[in-house]
Length: 189
Length: 189
DNA sequence: CGCCGAGTTGAACTGAATCAAGAAACGTGG
DNA sequence: CCACGTTTCTTGATTCAGTTCAACTCGGCG
Image (cartoon, rainbow over all chains, first blue to last red):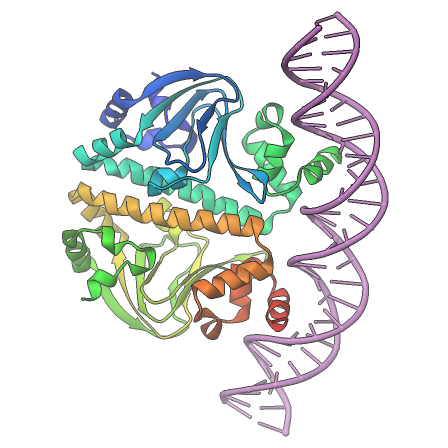
């Protein structure tokens, strides 16, 4: 059943009750969208929480004119303009598809209503946030203590397919280095 | 009333209902503890969530033998070994007091029981995590795009008192630079 | 008085950025 | 299916921020 896979990427589904999955599923809509499709544009409030079933998306923003990737979402991963989705204010992120993609999404107001109606579901929102918090804390340590080469190696280990599917420039900005440096790292091994 | 200040540091109290604060307060215990007191030691599971009323604490860990500060908690701030408190596994963090401190704490099991008994309180746990997530995401951007000098300036702006109260070595490791570099930054202005 | 932790300063080194120029791959229209 | 322009990737030379290692200063405090 596809629903049980919804949160696979965040090791979440095993912590979620069946009734929650059923209720969420009812609110979710599916779509197939082509490569390069824009899921969200900066400067607007993001009202969608996306789950990628097949394909690939990335969240990015512009820093001093440079395109910086903040997040990749591969199969069975989630993506949203998290700043905006949480804080209900204009987002600095854009989200685009990097491949033809099938995805589901839930609308913020529907999710909010569900959580208001069934407050015991808040627990799962909490667990989701706990998980992404632990993830992001790991990334900080990565940036503080690992060299460009190590960060690249870790990324590829975690998402082996990314290298074949994504521009080097996007990977480079994701791990906080320039494309030239990434190119050199790749060539030396 | 002290309770309404509990979560001041995370801009949280305005989002919390009075009944939640009352219930939490009942579970909290207060203590006065001296400078250098160890609140938590690495390798153990952390069962406490601390709120600093007066004084100062820091969470730190050892990386290649070096003492790295991960978090400071000043007045009205919260601190715990977040990895352990969330995941219920041994922590890599130590938490120590840097000044004589008065604090309150809540025990994990009590908090869990409260959330189980009154699931609608989960909402506040969620909001707390949303807030610290946004904070930590900001720190990532800081590390990616700001120079040592800029990171130092931002920290001092955010916590002006820290400079007078904390060793330079702790501040340096918190912003991801060596003590020598921090010393040079400080001398040049 | 002498020690000790904390902070400073200097010199050499290094990982990665920047700038610039080519090479390869890609896709779009004829 | 080829040709051409655009985007992506590589390579080289130079520069720079920050590290490392080492020595030195300063202010307390037993």
